[in-house]
Length: 229
Image 1 (tube, helix red, strand yellow):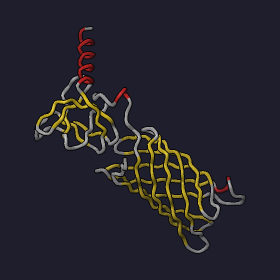
Image 2 (tube, rainbow, N blue to C red; image 1 turned 45 degrees about the horizontal axis):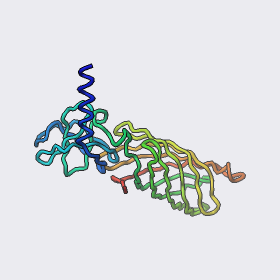
Image 3 (cartoon, rainbow, N blue to C red; image 1 turned 180 degrees about the horizontal axis):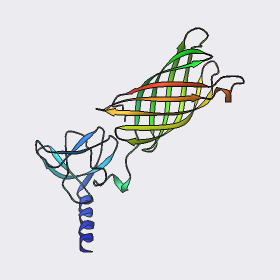
Image 4 (tube, rainbow, N blue to C red; image 1 turned 90 degrees about the vertical axis):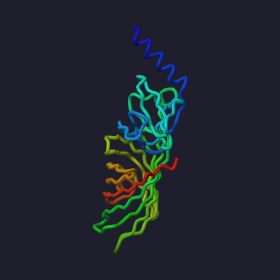
């Protein structure tokens, strides 16, 4: 009971003396506020953490559940230990953000290959749920028609560092009356603020056009640090 009361008191003190900080970039957490300190882990952008008013030589101390001393460089915009750091107001994490990515795709229609380029905006509705809207342009040879359009979809994501897997459902709206639902799945690799990945999209043209063949599209995706806000 006594240890429980001490822990409760430390949490109350941590909240009373701390302020929230939204992470805008990946940031290391250190075991002490000195040069040569050990990096304990890294957190992703978008998390809201609590920091105390304790500052030493450019390092600021993080509020933690256990009361242990963890530090970040004040000039960077923070990361924290996943489970130990007191995270955000009311226990809620800050997930709402907008990111951008670029992609190149290939596929076939009626036996003729085509190429697509796209740029996508990803609005995080939850940490695991993204509303994605991507403008694309298709070009090809022979009987392949050039298309311009929009793919809008909802993607569920799961982070398994350094890989992020995703899958979702959406709808394609394009010129030449190419409108159809689609399903997709893929994965992304993260390294140094850059993401590179692949995606497979199956477009059910037969659901909206009599006699049309469904299309399978393979994509390569590139994303920079990508956080717009």
